Length: 227
Length: 194
Image 1: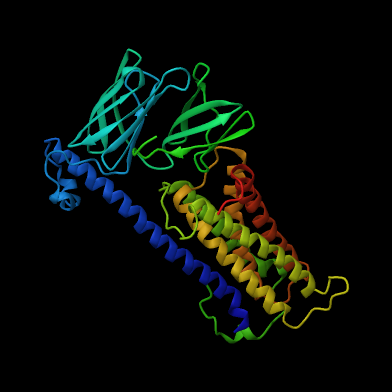
Image 2: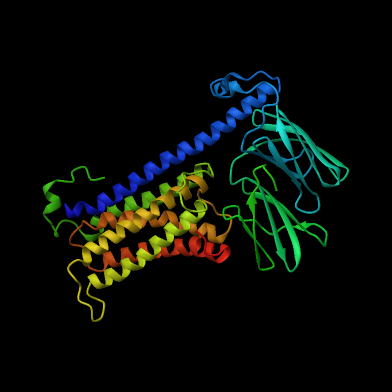
């Protein structure tokens, strides 16, 4: 009896792990299917025919009217804009959207707006703007910042990929930093109320922290509801 | 897994059967297999960023930090109780309950680490983007391999006396390494939060 103790300990640990894995699997799948259903709804709203592979998941949003169904999410799209090294991240939740355009050096633009019925529209400082269509897990559109214009087609990404932002007071200056983290690659810019934008310190997406001149910045994952 | 847990051989120690190396072959092989399997799973499985959460904490990270800290404290209890058990604590005679105490605090410590490992492997995966993270990922896989190995060695009889302390020390070192590269790092960078 006693000599089976260690084996029982191992099996108990295995059982706990199995239960937690099952629960985690369910949690992750629910989050995914919410997004999938959302994208289907968006697709219908945009007037395109849903593909056969989606019809199974498309049963959920039947109550949503064809037009003006908000993009519920939470969902994040991210990737490079066309013909450039500039990254774009778009985070949407409950019909609200936050987007960030960033090249890691000098180009950066925060935008806020709404998404419904397959279309999104965002605005930002200095007449920055973004318009796009979403559906099938991608957003396509155009974004302008400080007189420059890019077209883009960015897909959904999964955490920890996404959009991060931190604000802090470092030596009496307000620092705002933004990062776009996609599949292990990141670009980030920080601005102070005094100077030019410059490259943000490296973000650890697992902890959401970055270190600036010995001060720790705490970044939050932006989900679209606000900055 | 033992196909015949109730077989008579389990109850009848046969110290003459096989060398130390032969007896250790299966525990070491299984332990190594566990470590490699965890690493491969952590690397290949696409991190979801989502796992089941425990209520009462501000987030999944703080839950892990405190579970790991609990396991770390119990690991220190493990070493101390083992020293007493082996009669190596100066001026302390091993009480009769020390073996049971050592076993149960060890079990609790192990069970505390399981949810942490599940979250690490399922939501975050095996990562290597900086030294701390790489060390943590490697030691994490090695820890569960070492623990499995120790559990499989425990029932074996006729092994050299230094073996269990060495293997136990290996498990302890692994857990300390894990705690230093995660919880302590968290406390240092984020402060002590719940």
